[in-house]
Image (cartoon, rainbow, N blue to C red):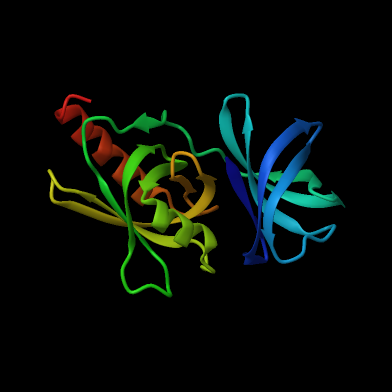
Length: 197
């Protein structure tokens, strides 16, 4: 399972990574792919699993060795997961992911959601399209709850691609207004509860 880091000054410059170790405000990352060069002293938005939760940081590249990277964790980003992650079990919630260079959205289904982000299952073809596309971030994502005739738009950034499951994890952008995320989250909880989830 690969995660995505984005240069904080150029979101198109990314690399895919697997966290190896986090200790003393430093992370060691194994690089599994990249777009553009990774330079020392460059800042990236990264996500790391720490103490059972996903935490977002601005990390500064200290050292690049072959396929390994040492990043100093400079700025932790406020953890927005004030509510637990809700797994969607009883409801089919379609999602549309819009890319600038595509006429039609990539479509999928919501797997889970929290105030920090959400996970979507998409077709193998769309999975590859999204992973390989040269998109600007964040992306426009549309949630549609058919039972309540509810449609909501939000911005989100892909952070993790699971090749085996063909799922993509998204996070709401740093510093974004979480009001829409809260509205969507609460609506999903309500619909799941009504459907016995």
